[in-house]
Each structure stands twice: as structure tokens, then as C-alpha cells.
Amino acid sequence: MFCLGCYGHCPISQSDNADLQACLEPFKNAFQEVSRIRPNSESSVFPLLFMSPSDLRPLCKALERAKSGCSFDLQDCDTDPLVDFANKNLRFVCAKQPKEFVVKNCIYFVVQNNTKCQSILRSKTKDTCDTIFDFYNCVENDLSDRCGTDAVATLVKAVTGYGCSNKALAEKCTKYLINRTVIDYAFLTQF
Image (cartoon, rainbow, N blue to C red; front, side):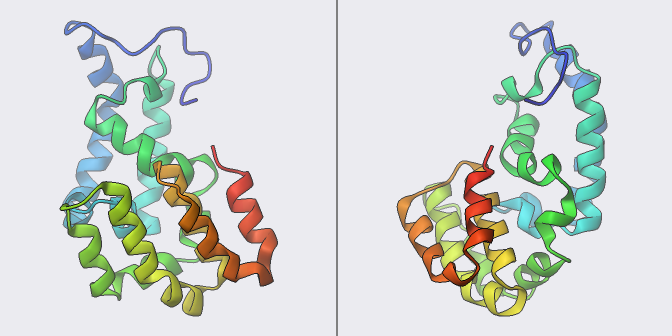
């Protein structure tokens, strides 16, 4: 849940939409700044992977300010594109600490240095989750080799937090049985 002590649901009427926009203002400003710095993030199916730790920290802080300033649960407002972005991309990252996601910047740097896998995230020809699974299949070995199984498990957690999960993804993780506790943790601590 995005806001403790919330007492209402997402505004439905047009006049109430001003309340939603006022709540989102800090997050909207931070998001626009990150989009300006990281234009690839906006054109991507899974924009989170194009953001550095220094991009994620202010986004998480601004999201927290937005949540605390609303009298309703922002998570219920997923018809708003900005809230939908936060729900899909930042729930996992901001729930703990942004550094957990980036695993010492390693995930970010692997993605930045793999243009072949990046191009998959920019293709919007298929179902979003199918595109994300194709990206995962592309980057999995490189991520494991360069960053270790913690990073792979963290990426799986981010993908499932985004709302994409399937049996094939779970089965792919079985090759990481050597570090099974990391994989178990990633699946057992989903939202």
C-alpha cells in the first residue's frame, strides 16, 4: 500500500483530479528531470533498467513525499500514467532501498553496455511482458557472469514486481541452484 493512514480512494471525478495532480507534483517534477537526463528511459518498455542509482534515489524520495501528501492511496490511481509508472517500476525499488536493485550499479552498467538487449526493451511490437522476458533471456548470462546470482535474482524480482511472471522465468532460475537462498528470497518476498 502506498500510503499509511489513507482514508479515501483515488479521485474519480474531474474536479477531484486536481487533488491527484497536486499530490503527484513532487514526483512529476523528479520524473521529468530523470526523463530529461535519461531520454532512453521514457522510450523503453521497462524504463527502470535505464536509470542509475543516482536517478532512482530522488525518484523514490519524491514518490514518498507524494504519497505522504495524499489523502488517498496512490496505488489505486493506476489509470494515471505517472502512478502506473510508479506502481510497475518503483514499487520494488523504493520499497527497500534503491541500492538493493542496482546491486552496486552492476545491473545498470550491464544494461548500458549491452545494446543488443537494450534494443529489445525499445521494441513495442509485442506484449509488454513478452518483451521483458525476451530482454531477460538476452541479458541473463551476461548479468550472471558480471554481477553474480544476486543480480539475476534481483532482476527476477523487479520483473515480477512489474507484473510479469511465468513458469518459464521461474524455471530459468533453477540453474542458479548454487545460490538457492537468493532466488528463494527473491520469489518469497514479492509484493
